[in-house]
Amino acid sequence: MTYCVGLCLDKGLVFMSDTRTNAGVDNISKYRKMFTWNVPGERTFVLLTAGNLATTQAVVSMLEERTKAPEERNPSILEVPSMFQAARLIGKTLREVIKESAPATGPDAESPFRATLILGGQIAGSEPRLFMIYPEGNFVEASKETPFFQIGETKYGRPILVRAHDPAMSFAEAVKLLMVSFDSTLKANLSVGLPLDLLLYETDSLDILKKTRIEEDDPYYNLISDNWSEALKTAFASLPQYEV
Image (cartoon, one colour):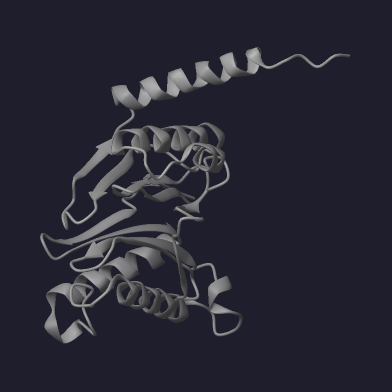
């Protein structure tokens, strides 16, 4: 399993993903689930992946090959004119990979090779946009009413995002929010694990503001984890008692 989040702010976009994959309790590995394509001053794309590892690796490899080999572009993600067209291209690629891998019978999207993706970024001349792409190849776009997307093991980290997200928050506040969301997920589900990948994109910069990996010994992450645990205990103790 995995956990990935793409978050919209007034200032830009924030992305975070874990790196754990597992095929049973005795086969746990680390794989990157955040991928970027960046042409400074022209376009920046960020892709987060969840689901069958072979499927997501095939999708990313096909997208990457089309950026380097002219005869394989069909077109390249670096040539599409809009974020909408980028989402269509990636959705089509995902659907093709699943269809090629799926059994001859049954819906492709229900095959064990299914995957779900989050795409975000900006192309010069347009606004930053964020999409969730489904195994069927279709997609939905984030909005003011739905300002973030989660894929993978979503339920444990969702409550804090719903309660605390504010589009006017700073990048620093958004990172703190995501660290709490991921810490809650890591505490509840062993299939999600450190290290975490973090990326910040500032609106109209058309370049990556910050991209870093948060390791198990990261002092800020551990400070947030410890303080959040204590804050929850304090908040619980301060609630009025039930009268028996």
